[in-house]
Image (tube, rainbow, N blue to C red; front, top):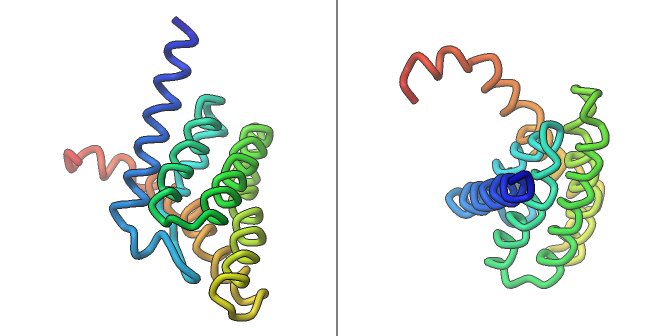
Length: 153
């Protein structure tokens, strides 16, 4: 039963991550991006099932790019970030930091190779998008949870 629950949670997280990425595809890909689905990386602080779920969700979303570098390195970066988020689960404000830093550096680097531009600028833009997704969006929903619940959404 425990293994079934783990696999089910992982699959749901993977599906939601991929769907969120693809629904807002223009924002999710390219040299300047805000991947809203990255807000789900905080789930790794609550359940280890999020670690494979986030990896497979990112892998599925990245398959749509057809870009082998993004498929491999973007997905592995999300996996590493999810593992580190899980390890930092007792430090609430630090838990979302690994996806911000790792994606800023790794994705910023390979976006520079693919699209050109200035490496520090690409790191900054990817990092800013990650910061919004990993810190601002979750905080917004936590602060407004009661309001959202009362509205029936």
